[in-house]
Image (cartoon, rainbow, N blue to C red; front, side):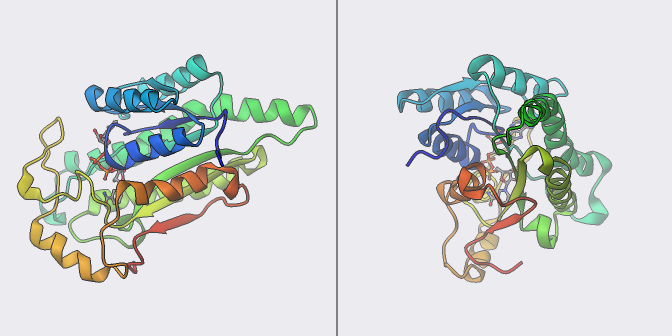
Length: 272
Ligand SMILES: NC(=O)c1ccc[n+]([C@@H]2O[C@H](COP(=O)([O-])OP(=O)(O)OC[C@H]3O[C@@H](n4cnc5c(N)ncnc54)[C@H](O)[C@@H]3O)[C@@H](O)[C@H]2O)c1
């Protein structure tokens, strides 16, 4: 069963890991996908892999923190595919530090990418999403259910030592999710969040691997902390990007047309 035939989705940060798995899964279910990433090469690879599998994807590379990108994402969806039905605000990274050593730049960077950018993307899409729904309502039809899925974290549900900046952003997006659900329910727009626990990706790889963002911020978790996390996951394994993508598909699909304002924990059962 293809759940998203003819729908168009924007997936930010879909050049790697979770975002890439989401873009590919939505495509497998028939969606046209606007692929975005800060890094053009990985984003192009996602576009190519979708095309090779018989799907349709369009590239819109650039940082979601660039004020021009939200409008470009929406324009790409409308120009390439003629509609916009699903937005997945996934792009992000971590820049950890303890409270007493954290400067404003490090704090603000997390609010910019995890909070301000998703807000701008949703605001940029507002004229289309609200306008299309209003046209249907004026014609006496219930608009099709459009979907926004925001990516949060257990840090955004329960806080986490060493992540005051990230936790603030990821908890902020939960507030934004619930507000969009209340404000846009009358347009039949559902807005939900997924809160991930430990998903294998660049952000959770051993820090010893030495990977960094393009601006040089170290990514990963010390190996001893990775090992310490495992016994606290009832399913006794870390999640894969594919594990992370499934609940996003559910929240993007008609299976969840009566679910809005929710936060789905995708944690392997770990208590937050
Ligand atoms: N991996 C986990 O365990 C975990 C847990 C909780 C939440 N998350 C969240 O999941 C999302 C995806 O993370 P991931 O684990 O797949 O990380 P990842 O680093 O493997 O992939 C993230 C992708 O987003 C891109 N990106 C980063 N900043 C961007 C920006 N400003 N504009 C556009 N693209 C940008 C990166 O280039 C990368 O390709 C993030 O929001 C992250 O905070 C991940």
